[in-house]
Amino acid sequence: MNLYTALRAGFPADLDRTAIDADGALYSWRDLERGSAMLANWLDRLDLPAGSRVAVHVDKSVENLILYLAVLRAGFVYLPLNPAYHAAELEHFIGDAAPAVVVCASRNFGWVSKLAFQRGVRWVFTLDDDRSGTLLQRAAQMGDQHQPAPRAAGDLAAILYTSGTTGRSKGAMLSHGNLLANAQTLKTFWDWRPDDVLLHALPIFHVHGLFVASHGALLNGSPMLWFNRFDAASVARRLPEATVFMGVPTLYVRLLQEPMLDCRRMRLFISGSAPLLIETWREWQARTGHLILERYGMSETLMLTSNPCRPEDGERIGGTVGPALPGVGLRIVGDDGSPCGAGEIGHVQVRGPSVFGGYWQMPEKTAEEFTADGWFRTGDVGRLDERGYLTLIGRSKDLIISGGFNVYPAEVEGFLNELPGVGESAVIGVPHPDLGEAVVAVVTPRGQPEPEALIAALKARIAGFKVPKRILVAPELPRNAMGKVQKKLLREQHAGLFAPAG
Picture 1 (tube, rainbow, N blue to C red):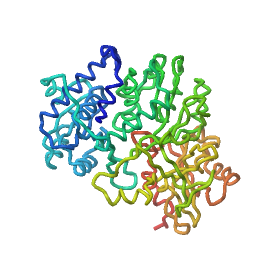
Picture 2 (spheres, one colour):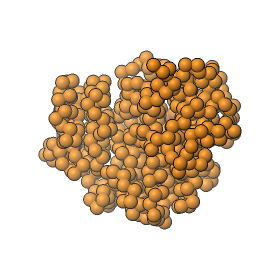
Picture 3 (cartoon, helix red, strand yellow):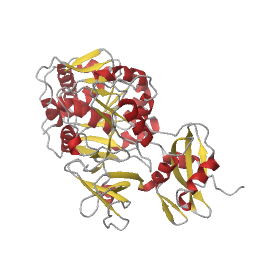
Picture 4 (cartoon, helix red, strand yellow):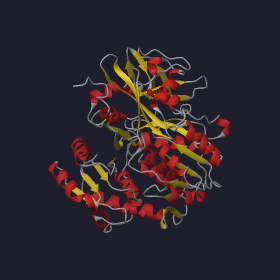
């Protein structure tokens, strides 16, 4: 059961139809079939050991997607890496995953190849977003027919390294079965239709752009309007041609700044990878008439929950990530492992066919993350309402213990974001000589927020121990490539805020 075979079965009967429109460069379904066959044949020719990892550190391009399909076809393990990673980061990934092949952008070949060869990598090729590079030159010599390598559902298909906000990144191992089960569930639950067109503006080194967006279109045989980089004006111009759009919250914020949003054909807007402000959700509805569908997933689990797509499946509620997807087990437990009732805050645990097999070469860490009865500890904190809708409160590692009281940053952020003058906020805990940790908020301005006035307003709304001891105003919040606020960086930047003078 090779995942590629399942995706290929979704291609339309007429392979000469357009599969991808990349700013006017048209790729047919036959191009995807032939191109991935040629690259798979080249990988086979390298005579790599079974289970070899192919590390890919390149800019987004259609050829990058075709390379992913080729790695699946050949039965190897795909390892996508953020092209923004520098040498120290890449050194960890290559040293840990020990890939047999590394593919990088031509501009980085000098330092990437040196680093790779020093760590025993035999093959380093280049691939650029203008259809050039040594990888394509080699593959051009190959035949365009290829029989996908047989693979079992439990065989490893990809390794995704987590963002590493609490230390060294860990490689989440995802199987052919994990990826296919999730893609098939989403195809049904999100009601993919024969006439759907996906506007693809996400990076493809991550679950959202590669395993949710790309898999969805490929499995459904739906064409994609492809953007190597997100540009709000360009995306807005092509919205009238699309029916499905997936984005991180930042993309929606930027699109709302465009004067024209023509959504005449759109049926579904999906947001994930980071929390969507309720204000953004409401403003999008007011501008477009569409309710953004929020969902929840992780590198280790793929998609877990989703607001309903079809009205008959239930109401779409902003600020929540919906109920568990079909086949997914979801529970909220307290610190002692006891079940939480409706509305009670606790730790989110899950199980199901898309949950990963463990962390690469980290059996002890893998064992720590699963309960004795087989549930994965997500590290997220949330609550379920009486309908089974999940509201995420934050990461357990972001929990602030101030003077012995637990403070959940997302709860404080929710109140802060409603106050005049606040664009958005990030609440963190920093060392404090009396309290252990002090609650601190960093806010971006929408107007001219007065920190003391914000603190006074919060004191009238929430318990005193939750009120930030200090509110700092910054032009923007630091984010990673998927739009998540980097709270670890904020904690490091402000660690000395309450340090004794001298």
